[in-house]
Image (cartoon, rainbow, N blue to C red; front, side, top):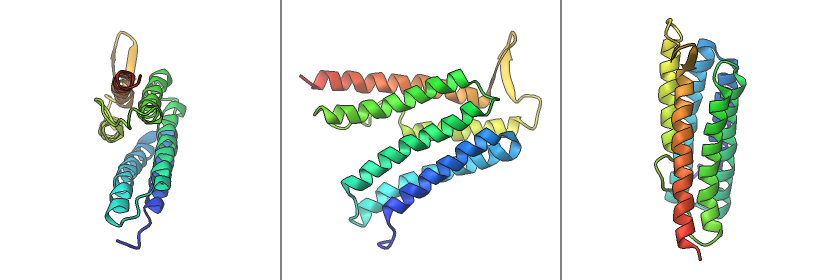
Length: 187
């Protein structure tokens, strides 16, 4: 384990996210299946990089910086693939992306102004990935039936759209929570 470079795992996690986004964009059964697999791999390598860095004494500010930067790009690639797919609701996905980016931004901005790094709130990155994996799996199964979308009165959402609604709401609430906590700490 001491020979594993945590930054290599960070890059692997990022590449998995890129492949997930590309597969969302491709769509269809195989695209969804591979998107699911690559999101799971992204989550796994993202969880391992920091743990291995700490366990091997290789934790560094550079590694933390790289991890945060590539995580944001990973989020953009994954949601960007959903937006570009043409199947899912891009407006909802855009609001989800805003929530994702603002959650992370407010966490680091709090640190920048001296209020400390804030990872709190109702929805962090791991939560978002689990939600997206779950709904991608549901979408994958439903895509083989007549129930690949849900709706009423002429307005329909795919199951991935539903995940984007949850992430949009949860992400923006988390951003507000972090902003309020930071505001109370700074003078």
